[in-house]
View 1 (tube, rainbow, N blue to C red):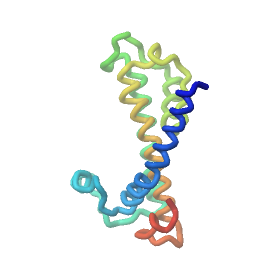
View 2 (cartoon, rainbow, N blue to C red):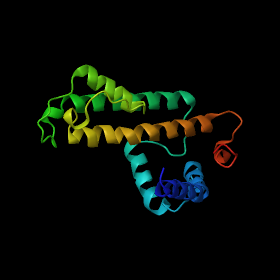
View 3 (cartoon, helix red, strand yellow):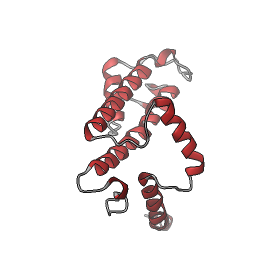
Length: 173
């Protein structure tokens, strides 16, 4: 390992340690529903989204509602990615004119990316089009991790013995 490699690792660790407290504080404020630096921009978007979906922001969900929501979200994600993979031959951003992904591989990849295991049993740009990689796989890389964080927050919120408005400052984060 060269000196540059060691310095790069040290720099990474220093930045990681320096960002831990402010990022952790920010995340605790977001998950607690407290005002934060993004509130002026994101609060109107959040209220609009709630109105469009018919969601009441002041109502808590129980564990069954959380479970149903996450299963339906995962199922929708698997189906959408499967459809994108199967139809990639007719979708845009396919300069190599790749055909649709075979059904077994499309199903395997859809499940894999939805569960955040990202097992790739194919040859990158020789199997998946740019559209499939951008809209399907990259989106799932983000959404599967985001869904995991949402499930963690739901588990913490519905855990007995933790008042919901005090859960973030009670040492659970």
